[in-house]
Length: 147
Image 1 (cartoon, rainbow, N blue to C red):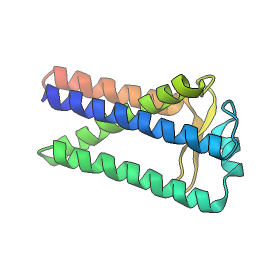
Image 2: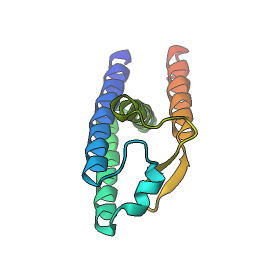
Image 3: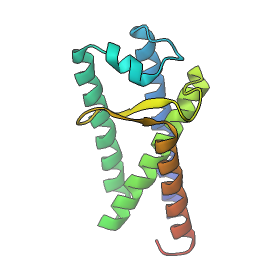
Image 4: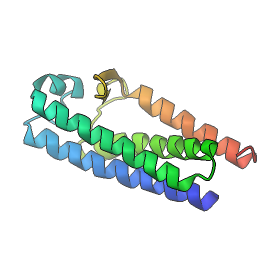
């Protein structure tokens, strides 16, 4: 089971970096300055691209769901696998962006967390905190033999 958790974490990290690279290229293609807030850049995004971004986000969630369905043997295990992988993906997405373009400049930077069904806006510390708590909780439960 530990091997499965490690592989799911690695998948989440790889997927996070891939998505971070896509976002960097998207920002460059749209002329968005590296230091500019994603909330401010959202206002510049043409509606057509907003729809395209929503489909990319839906595909991301679908990939995470499929991996969790394949990894878990019971429904609780599938849900835990999804939450674990999602948390690594979300946490390392921000780390990837910071390594690539030094964004976000601080944890209080406002971000567009998700676009489905409409934009979710919050400071970067919020998803980082939730992801960290999720990973820690699952790890503690796993190592105390609850999972």
